[in-house]
Amino acid sequence: MPPKDTLPMPTARRRYHPAMLVVGLTFLALLFSAGLRSAPGVMMLPLELHFGWDRATISFSAAIGILLYGLVGPFAAALMMSIGIKRTMLGGLVLMAASTFASQWMTTPWQYVLSWGVVSGVGSGAVAAVLGAAVVNRWFATRQGLVMGLLSASTATGALVFLPFLAWLSQGGAWKPVALAVSLGCAALIPLVLLFMPERPEHRGVRRFGEAHDTPPAPAMKQAATPWLAIEALLRAGRTPMFWLLAGTFFVCGLTTNGLVGTHMIAFCGDHGIAAVAAAGLLSLMGFFDLIGTTASGWLTDRYDPKRLLAVYYGLRGVSLVALPFIDFGQVSLTIFAVFYGLDWIATVPPTVKLANRSFGERDAPIVFGWVLVAHQMGAAVAAFGAGVIREVVGSYTPAFVLAGLFAVAASLVFIFGFGRGERVGRAMEPLPV
Image (cartoon, rainbow, N blue to C red; front, side, top):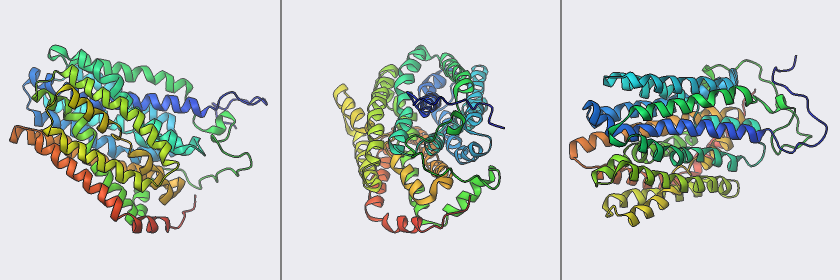
């Protein structure tokens, strides 16, 4: 019996491929997930003023949310193989909408940790970069790097769209309008995914985008996918140096992006007398240039050695973070930083996904990338909490930004001097039966 959402195909050539609809809905889901994860940075000062919570306590909730955002990823990838991409997306969006809506009645720190840390972290983890990797593998035979770059750029677009608006809502120390706006945005996307998101190309009577008509169909899996596959894939990947090289450098990626800049940049600017709306505009500018940079990174990944691209990205990012605390925080210098840093904020994702696909195969790659993303979010959680602690103890964010920049430079050197052997071993893995 054909799947429920299978539609008859006309004999005439389609004007568009349904993969475009899938990319559009996935982009929106990732955008709202990014908006949710960026909101704690906007709410940090209002919560501090309203409840009297210290910055380390508020940062702890952000760190928990960031960590779970990554930790859920490989299990979400396994669920996408079992119950489907569409159902996994819907579950994540429901959790995101419900937890942020309920947070309007919180009065104690543990409630903030539960709503914005635990529940929303699990929900947003189901709508994270692994979703993009799964969609790209399932729907595209060509242009995978470009599409992954576009989907990765949705994080930047989330900052571009949401941060100035959320900062405007938080004027005067208000935080509840921010929570309500994020909740309504996530809820609005649920019916769109429910009604219009197809599960597989064959459910729309087509092949993957760019796939030749004489390509044999993928073999069916001999057993149903379960979340245990996430652990099995980790055990297989963990035996290769490639996995640890990818995970270690992606830990640094998280340390130097959403954990530090995404969570603390508005508060850092506040320490220099810059209003929240203006600081959010700075992050929005970074998001705009990252939208360009990450999409371009996907295009470059289809054409050039991803290892060399990653060496450049991490090196430039490290230099910009080390320099930031020593600029005058004037409009011109901050704009230059926003452009320079923004161009490679998350440009690391497409080449990292390509290295994972090349080394671990189509079956394991999305799940392995999910585990690599766990390392990313572990680094982000360390930065989100650690920078808050450093600010409380030292009274300045300067040591946190300089240290993060040095880690990025070290990651660049790893790709320059330490990646060759790891790739050879990764490629030598025997293909696994499906």
